Length: 487
Image (cartoon, rainbow, N blue to C red):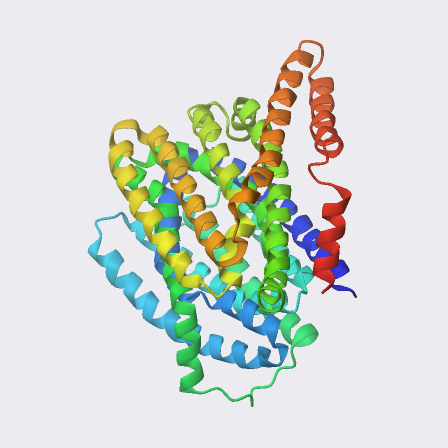
């Protein structure tokens, strides 16, 4: 199979999986929010955010190193699997003891304490399975990545819905049974990922030698990524944690309702970056000029898709929130309208952020994450105590803007290397897309006077037809991308 067909297959595989996962996620969020109510949903959000920050140390950024290095030399696959497994098992033991110690020092309810332990263990399992997913991505067999994320998601959603409809409780808690389902899905994830990896990709060989020197090398390479991921998690989850601390569980639930929808939407542009990451890793070694072209073309494509989704989200925010969550979450509407622009910023620059990693400059991702984290915490202190969920939404939007401006700055140093003479040609397509988006929105509201269905269909056709006829994505763009990916 040619490289072009492989990349297209990967994008379709991940795209289909992510779309299905997003739909399943939205369905589950809808039922969980209604079942738990704003307060219970806020408790679930706080516990998950707290557990995710503490448990992510088990991954240690190894997933990205495996994908990058094995993509360049596939004979090293088993050595990386074995080494990563040793590191992660040891880290699981250390981190879990640390979590127990931290929780015992906190003044929280028994329900929250039990939930932190359960969800932390489920996240340990998910992080362990990332080793195998890194191998799938390195071999550009992302249909297996799609499969091993989709099956556990389906199991989790179906069993969680069973818990909800049965009204099952444990220790007088509605949330604990759902958390236990998360553990079961994590076990399935590890088993399926491991079986597929050793049956389809890599021959299981426990005789492969690893040593302390290689383990140290893997930890050293992964540490900047681990630091970046932990810091990024802190600032991404800080909005939930600060809301819980300053405004209580109800305000946290109101914010989380919108925040979870944004996380599901971000999975859509993420698929392109995931599919192109192995290609970019190889291009950095073979042709930096081709890498630069891939980044620019892919970013333009992502902006077209993300801007259209942003228009839909902003215009239909009230209908989306009420349909999914009910009238108890009316305050989430304005939060969603703010956060949809955070999605636009994050989604557009996904490929740009991955280009820094492909260029072996992961320490700059750490620097970026640290700066953004500090900004987010400062903004949370300024806005959340006074403005609650609205303040958290504004804080997140400003943090995302800072984060992606820095990504663009670092990428421009190491991969894009844009000259002053190129700036006008780079900006022009984005301005044209914005104008098309504004006209599309105006067209929708005009046609809305006649019929909602006609307005939706006509404005959608107008948007994408306009991007075609203005040659924002030209046939030459497609040919250039194909010729590069073939190499």
